[in-house]
Figure (cartoon, helix red, strand yellow):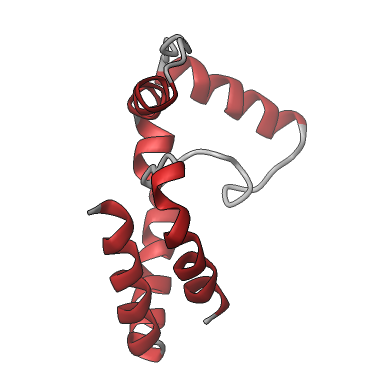
Length: 110
């Protein structure tokens, strides 16, 4: 419920914020940079991304630090499976809260 209240309060300041979906921030950061430049008349440059290079760096750091699959900061099949399990469990137990949170989310992206 705190999550919902926090974002409801922030709605009053929506016009001063750059709103980015998690997927866009992770997979299309240049769309966020574009919005930022447009809104604030800035000139931040797009980021040249190469997914393979980034994932290779993350994998190397994971090996060096003996991280588990869940600790590595990149997508994986194992995480997708677990995410589906968690989503199903949360949907079953907290459907009313999820509906409330989704209504607030729609106000941000509209």
